[in-house]
Length: 259
Image (cartoon, rainbow, N blue to C red; front, top):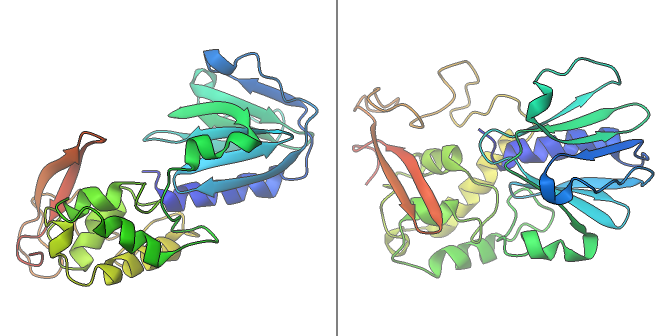
């Protein structure tokens, strides 16, 4: 599931092969931007902002969001793609590489000067160079009645966490996901652990919060409903949390280890 660590690695990979190169082909397969052609423009860099990708090309940025299913692949010219062509939403070619964005949840082209229009609302980026833990904690604490799970998922508070990290973070801090933010003691420690968890996973292909990358061993509670807690053996519970600005999310917790 794409979260901030996945998007960070994607940006690093794309930047390594595209930065400094001139586009020899550009095909944006969404109706609003289907006529955009950046062929001949130079790719300056590719960066992540939370769960967002910005590909800076000439005076423009291609902004994409993976949502649930999106991926970017990189191929040598004439190499067979690993996904069907009809799933491609953006294709960028250089002399040596072809970058293909499949099933992207969002893709749009904007002027670089307008990037704040699409990512300016984000809170501090957990994997960004300007990470600000104090500001992230301040934003979380600004709505003390809100459930901690929902507050951590809100990208306006801190950018990069998804459902996997948030469920695991609540377990590791021993906090029920439904607990109001104002009742969470040591909120700064929650923020600090979030930063450590996502940073530890940013260079891993197999995400883990347990320290074990073997299949079936990577997480404590996420997607483990009914299975025994790895610490106490109590069956993991599940439910749904969300709000008007956030879709309902499957939530997992241990009723013994989290209070």
